[in-house]
Length: 157
Image (cartoon, rainbow, N blue to C red; front, top):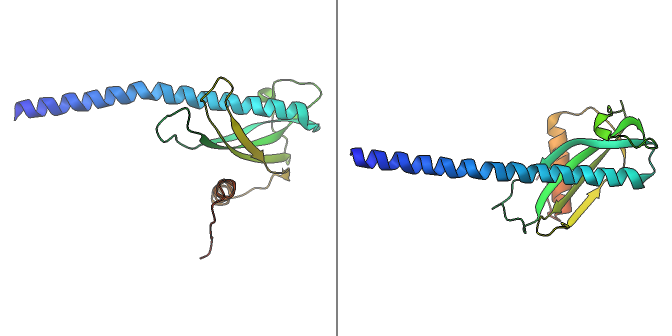
């Protein structure tokens, strides 16, 4: 009985150790996605012709199936208008969000399978920021993701 208990503990510690090794890789990938989204927003600011800069407000990353970099990973993010003029070109992260400013919700997929990753990102048109409950926000993000994936859904079936 004592041998069996010791073996079970060793297996448990081995599994925990392996999970601990995988966590930094997942965190590094998540940081890479956030950096990529910030680069996308920087390019958007340069090409949009909008009066003020936009910056990242919310980033939602869908968990990867098996951490396979060749498999596209779904992401959605929200960028919001800041108080900084687009002509100054400062770091948007140093700018406060504009009260009642514009917001754009973006959705897409990106794969890390090459030095220049492929991405398919689309953003909806500008909207005035409205105060909403968390349920409505999550529902809207889910509907946008389903629409992007061409999946039919029914709310009141």
